[in-house]
Amino acid sequence: MTTRISHWIDGRLHEGGSGRSAPVYNPATGEVTAEVDLASVEELDAAVQTAVVAAREWRHTSLSRRAAVLFAFRELLHQRTPELAAIITAEHGKVLSDAAGEIARGLENVEFATGVPNLLKGGFSEQAATGVDVYNIRQPLGVVAGITPFNFPAMVPLWMCANAIACGNAFILKPSEKDPSAALFLAQLWKEAGLPDGVFTVVHGDKVAVDAILDHPAVAAVSFVGSTPIARYIYERGTANGKRVQALGGAKNHALVLPDADIEMAADAVVSAAYGSAGERCMALSVAVAVGDVAQPLVDAIAARLPKLTVGAGTDPDSDMGPLITAEHRDKVAGYVDAGESAGAAVVVDGRTGDHPEQGFFLGTTLLDHVTPEMTVYTDEIFGPVLSVVRVDTYEAGLDLINSNQYANGTAIFTRDGGAARQFQYDVEVGMVGINVPIPVPVAYYSFGGWKDSLFGDTHMYGPEGINFYTRGKVVTQRWPDPATSSVDLGFPRTR
View (tube, rainbow, N blue to C red):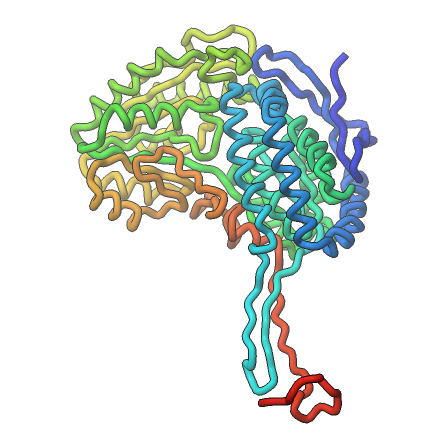
C-alpha cells in the first residue's frame, strides 16, 4: 500500500477530495512510493479563504515577533537538515550531499529574512514644507503564492516563503507533484516555529491548481520557477488578472573558456557545474565555449574526469550523481544525445551506455564535442547530465554566441586575465555572471534572476528585490498644528 500525500491547510493535513491523484516515484528504483492528492478549484479556493483570514491577523504581528518566528524556523531547519535531505533524495533522486547543499542555500534566505525589522525601514523627511513631514512605509500584499519546480523542492520554496512571511503576508505553496513531501516537512517546521495556522499553506496539484491560483481574486502575487513556456504562460495569465508576477524561466548557461585559463581548475569547475544533481538545475552549465587552442586540452581534461564519477542511488555515499526525476525525462534527455550525434556532434563520453544501475531512471554523464548552434542539443534546455562543447576562434565570437542566445540566466568566464574578465562582465547580456565561478548563484542579500527569456516580470527572486516584490510602498504626508499657535500647554517653551 502506497503512502497518501495530502494538502496542508490551516495548520494541519487535509486529505484531498477531488478524487484525483498522481504517483510519486523513487527515481533510484523506479517504484511508486506514494500518491499525492491533486486539488480541485474548490479546494484551492477554500485554502485561499483560510489564508486571507490568517493574513489579516499576521499583518498586525510586530516585526520583532515575526523575526522571532523566523529565527526559530531557521534553527529547526538547521537542526533537521538530515531529515529533510533524506526526503528530497527519496523523491528527487539527487545525492544526499546535493540535497543538504540545497537546504543550506535555502537557509541563507531564511537568515536574510530574519532581518525584517531593518529590511522594512522606510525614509523620513522633516519639514518637506513648512510644518509638513513626509515618510514612506512598505506594507504586505495579503495572500501570495509560489509555484515551484521539482529540481529544488526545498530551496526554491525558501527563496519565496521566507521573505513573503517576514513581510507580513500569508503564503500558499504549490510544489511540484513529482516530489511533494519536502513542502509538507517545511510546513511542519513553520508550525513548530510558532507561525500561526493558515500563514503557510501547501496545496498539491497540477494545471488545475495552477490556473486556480492565477485566477483567484484574493491572491495578490505569484512567484514561479520553471521552464520558459510555462513561465510565459503564468506571467501572461497572472498579470491579465491584475496580479504581480515574477516568473523565472529556462536557461542555457554557457562557460567561456579563454586560452589562458587554468585548464585543471576550469575542467573541475565545469564538471561539477554540468553534472551535479544530474544536470537538473537551472544554473547548470550546459555549454562550454572553448576559444582557440584551449578546446582540445579542455575536452581531454573533462573527459578524463567523467569515468571517475559514480552514478548510483542518492542514498549511496559513494554516488556522485543520482538518477533523473522520471523515466520519461531520462528518455527525452537521451533523445537529445541521439539527435546531436545524428547532426554531427562527436560523442566523447556516452552516458547512454555508461556503467549505471539498470533499475531506476539513470543516465550517465555525457560529453559532446564539435556542437554547432543549429543542433537541438545546443538550442534547447536539456535539463540533464549532458555537456556540449562549442569551439570558436576568438573571444568576440564566443561573446556573440552567448549574447545571441534566447536564454540569459547565468554564465561564466574562465581566464587569468583580469581585463578580459572585467570586459566580459560589462559586455555579456546575462543576468548572473561568474568569473572563475561556474555556478554564480547570488548570496541571499543580493537577488537571483536572468534576462531575456529566462525572466518574465520586473523583479528578480529573493534578496532586496524579493522584499519589494512582497510589499507595496505607501507615502504619508502629514501636517500638525503649529505648536507656536496651539492653545495646548506642551510643558516646554514654544520655539520656531
